[in-house]
Image (cartoon, rainbow, N blue to C red; front, side, top):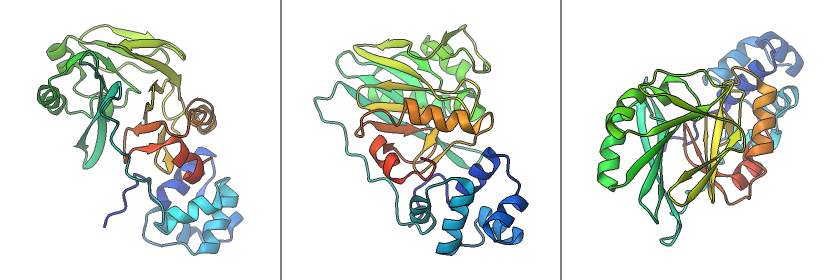
Length: 276
């Protein structure tokens, strides 16, 4: 069975190393692992020993026990149960390949009104439009967690087809768009039918990355994955701190819906994510 996580051991140590501006040589010397072996570990061609996992965790400021569970494929998030039938919201996951790798977009549906938000595009607007038709919901809003192409390509086509207002964080570079984008900042609230969606700053992967939080669900883009984080392209410190402060501070049962990989929960990530 294929391992379900978006990031393997090699991805995690590579992201932590690059985020802290450490070369492979520096990490190899500090952990007493050869640079050649470290390179192979990051490329998934060499499995680490238990002692190597703990040495690397110490050097990279990761949690060794959590990192070992991922290195040995002993943990992945428990399958998330469906929301109760009487829940005020529903979540539809739309996973589509971009460059050979699956990317997640979502529909957040207000069950009371049938209104829905499209969260990111997965670069496949035609798939999203098909899913909208299948579920017979009324899209009123497009919410963008960040502007990378695998999450925003196809936006003009979606805007033309749905006439939705599109929202993005004020600090985020703006993607190609057909209509004017509305800018958001931390703590802003957007209404989707009777649902209240709150903006949470989660920069670091991008300059204006944000998450969308409502009731028992948070849509986190590439800020955090099950057992990992998005590549800290802008600021590792900002990414770790913003996720800790604005996402992992939510109740443990809040479901996290990332831009890649399986859904998880706040509680699972507090217990198992080696970055925290």
